[in-house]
Length: 338
Image (cartoon, rainbow, N blue to C red):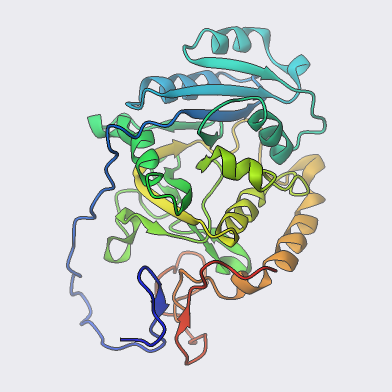
């Protein structure tokens, strides 16, 4: 037993204790699923920033509403620039059940500001930050339980955020949680691995605590979102979701990766690549801001072993040459104030 451990704490063993013969398959264990009590049915509103100019938004949001077993749910479509929306697309969107349009006036487009403004215009227990290019799978009946699975984790008052597992349209992995320090800043775990691959020791299929998840499909307590001031609008394009997750953890809440909620993310269909075109100059500013604010957790993600690689594509594999110190590093609870 390691001294100083408390129930629920995570500690990393700094040395390799044993070696498994090459070709030996690790044992598989079915991951237990968090179940939602029938009496626990908080209201959920999806905040969906959209330009409403392309048909993919209609297709994706129709599937979000139709392939969803959770009933206490609605969609708020947030239009940052209503005058630029397609009349035809907007007409199709407003015809969808349980969807209402919030007309904002935010120019130039600022993803964080749009979500913040929309959050103040809805009355809901939970907010689902959702991109308009995300859609549930339709492979089996259980795919309709994606939101129910995310809501179930909110039964624990310690949980502040729950994130989904996302696949690209070609079924390759896009997101299985965010690893701080990966790719020298932060990166999605599992990116570009085949979606049918459960990952090392089935880690892709395990609900677990992580430092951050993507805002493309992120469930958060509405009161906590407002208490923290929402997303930091100085991260106008990207990294606002990572910063939000780290502030939620700093407040003493957990961020959970929920693989039972597996959806497709047809990334960047609406607005193009994050830092393309006129937004290209913002990348270095936002990266520097994240580094300055969260240097400690970028240097040592408390949910990632210090002996594992920080090279994209080699997550969970031993780093070579080895990195990290020789002492056991424990996850702080909560994160220290930066």
